[in-house]
Image (cartoon, rainbow, N blue to C red; front, side, top):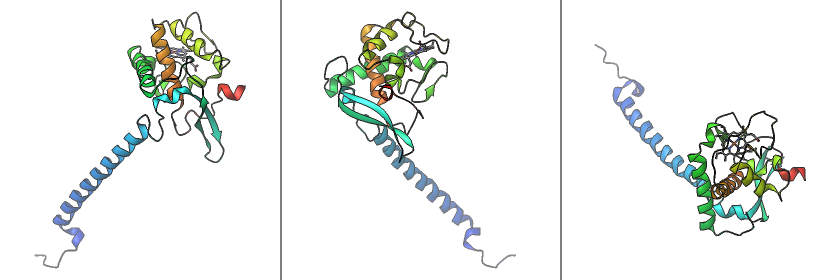
Length: 200
Ligand code: HEC
């Protein structure tokens, strides 16, 4: 019938091989990207500082060259007046993270942009100007988390955070978790955020 030689791309074998190579190639790219993401998202990795960063002053400053704000880790600024080892810092942040999951903060808030839009994003809550001064901040946050109804800071949204029966230890863990989260390089998110230091 048709005995003119077929071009390579018209043969079934060619497309079978191509499918195999493309699948294998994509698989390798996925494996490489998975390990790359792990190195970028692990505490102590490129973008996410180790937990002991909560011993430091953390700010978030606009870099005109990069067209975005980046976290700036400064001098010592111990949380609750005590320098923590890496392990102690991990324990405290971990308690906070688990409390945030147990109490489902994401049901109202976003964390790193994920969650609900009822209440403010918590990614940089540690740096929020609403805490008024860096001297009062830690206590104000703990008090607020233990009893957000009595210690509501702003009614600008006319929304109140309900009492979630958070203990003092859990509140301190949450503050550590929020401080640590504010040190994460989120590639400029949130945009145009003025920190408590910018106000002073
Ligand atoms: C039922 C909804 C709801 C849940 C659940 C909730 N919040 Fe809130 N939260 C709010 C509202 C509303 C506000 C704003 C009210 C205010 O500032 O007084 C707020 C404010 C805050 C603020 C101050 C925000 C800022 O930018 O400084 C922090 C910090 C906070 N919440 C932490 C938490 C944490 C941690 C959890 C989980 C343990 C949590 N919230 C769970 C509703 C909620």
